[in-house]
Length: 148
Ligand code: DQA
Image 1 (spheres, protein in one colour):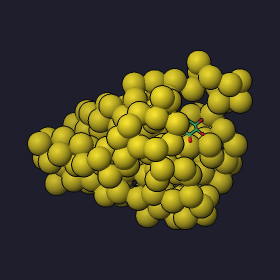
Image 2 (cartoon, rainbow, N blue to C red):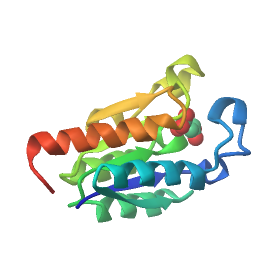
Image 3 (cartoon, rainbow, N blue to C red):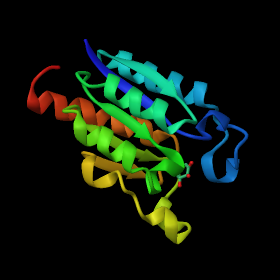
């Protein structure tokens, strides 16, 4: 069974109450439940992790090496964490960068992603459905490159 790591960064544990007009009303548990259900329907399994700490996210990315892919919403670390970028670059597992909001339609500093160049692709602006889209993308990539 293909395993996909779903990794969320700082403040995403507050989804549901955090600026719901930007990030929606669903909690992280609800979003993860939807991803898990879709994964199981497609014969895959998801491993979920959230942390507000940069170092714990680096470790989670390293540990996800050898899985079928990483769905990563790095939150604000997206915009400046070279440590996360290096972690993604160091492993052979593809990562898809996800943002709930359309970061390109917001403040200037959110348009910069230091992790984008080392990710397989980026999904932004489709709300929490972006995580499901990332799942589809990783499973499709896996189908084209052999089972992991
Ligand atoms: C976010 C966008 C980031 O700029 C922000 O810091 C977040 C959430 C998103 O999902 O839209 O924490 O990654």
